[in-house]
Image (cartoon, rainbow, N blue to C red; front, side):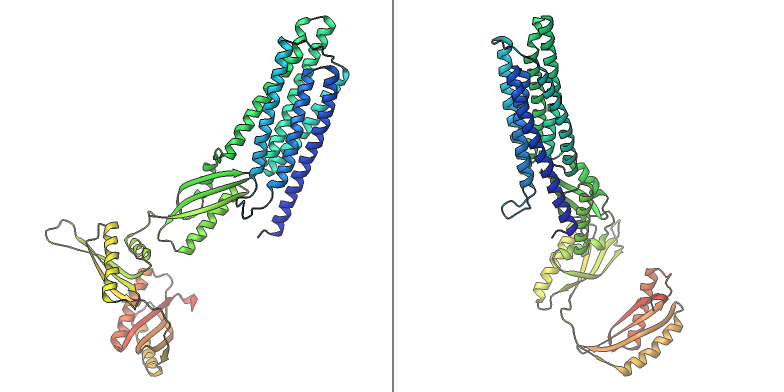
Length: 481
């Protein structure tokens, strides 16, 4: 759902785009009327060609007005990517109309140059109307271009292009009328062709601009990738943490929105929720670089440079929705071999309802894939056990807890790193006795030493109380106590 600020911004955008498009319709209607009247009165093909050009501008402005109204409609079940391409379609129609106008101007100019003589009367009204046309076209093109840039509207940009070309083409017509005026005054017959030549010049301008506009419009309608967009996306994604590489980028444009599909690779050892967070960070980075973009991120697993043997084994097991723990690797010297053999021991957790044959099949499958991906491993020993799927009830053992409390105090005096024990818990779980406690240690100790120390403490506890099934020690620095 859109936030209130976003809805307000969209409403402002629609209102501003419609207002500038409607003002263009009114300006084009005024210019068509004035140029047609003056063109017919003066018999100037240059002015009539400008009237035809402005007539096409009127049609184009009308198309633009309706297209910007429809293009901003939200996506629906039938148009799931929105209605933005209506703007591009309107620009394509405008291009076709411009080419039709140019064909008529070239045909009439050729007739006047070679087959038909028309007397042109360059009156002051003609100059006044063309000057007014230049003024209106100039300010209209600036207003349209400003809103087009602000909201990335191709339809408004095309309309601005129409009015901007009118400025130059009207200037050429004025030059043609001036030359005809000089020809009439000084009886220079060779200048009498200035008007149709001016019309051909106008047609040349229109053809050139129409070709550029048409190419861009066709590119959008055919989903051509915007120039430089892939590099922009790759640059935005490169700054996102934990992204290994950008595998593929696909972009398309509809109206003022970009639809971007990007495939990234992240480490296969990263948990799913972290992968989702990375995907959202990629979307935000792209939208920050390319506003008004609809981003779809596809994530593929990759092998990070930092991935080690233990990470790879856990990832292979997770691929089958299985967990492994207590993964240990060691090298064993073998006589007759130049290098020692690499041996891996691991514990594989399987569902408790499986038979030995089913569990062994799973273990063999894991071992086979480990050997394929890690050929440096010579031997794999898998211990099969069940994973806990239910919470068991427990009973407290107060007498044993008191004896354990005294034993822990003795251990604390024996190991100088130990600063104390607390939260001792002794329970029976499904007929087995388990114990847990918190141990306060120096916070600057390395984790390897902490692990060795807790392992030694747990072993000493089980030696003193052999009835214990499991002893678990949670270590913490003094400030956490």
